[in-house]
Length: 339
Image 1: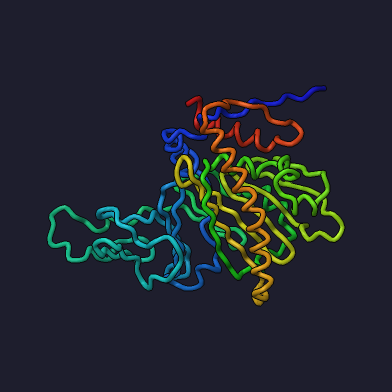
Image 2: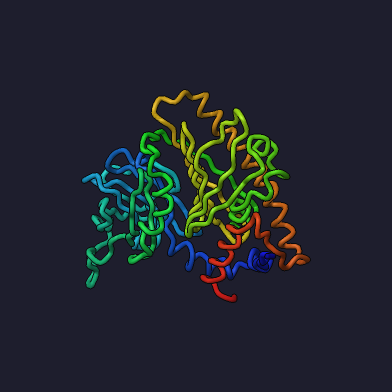
């Protein structure tokens, strides 16, 4: 029986600044986002600050060793507490603008030289908190105070990784890549193997032509049989809304596909290796990943230019190769509606 080839999202959905504002609020402000690994927060005061879809966020380890997360926004006049990156803030988060100081649990400790003011109660000016969950050493946040179930979200991954000792990967390395395309353009490229033979010659040479995408919402798993001697065996997956998971025998790569604007995306790569991994092996693994990334960046930027050109409107998805992409587009439709 002939399978239906679903119609794609219209091209306008990939170039509309107003739609991006809706996606920020309805997708990224409501989804579970990977911000850090516990290895990046080794001591009280350790923090990681990241901007996601225009939302400045920060995770910090408090004096009791608990991991907290907040919007990286001072309650005075919206100054930043820390620039994007990692470091140690000591015993307090301090606004870079006027010096308001916050305890590591988010409470306002000092409104520096504010002066007497009737009706100003510091207890009402704690940092805006985020919901925090840790899973296998990874720190996830959600901007909702009553978010969708984290356990249900991660259940397919937990089952697939039940026998994997990923906790031994504790040496973290970071890299970032800027892409001139809408975030959905990049995610959709990630969700199918149809393009591998055309775009990734090295990857194509290392796997057989049996690439499959298994959809277990909100997670997808990618499977392909390695050719003899190819070192690509492991677990490949993706979790809504923008997280790629790559687990290998000697390390793990978590790919965050952060939207920067309606036409720019940033890939934040978090590599983790076992302690003591030789530096040349780490560099080799990172460079191998960068080769594939450069190929994906090239093709996604080409596609985005054509989406912006105003000629193409909609296409059709392959039932054989693009079932995961179809699920993703249906989820986007469901959330943003017929905008």
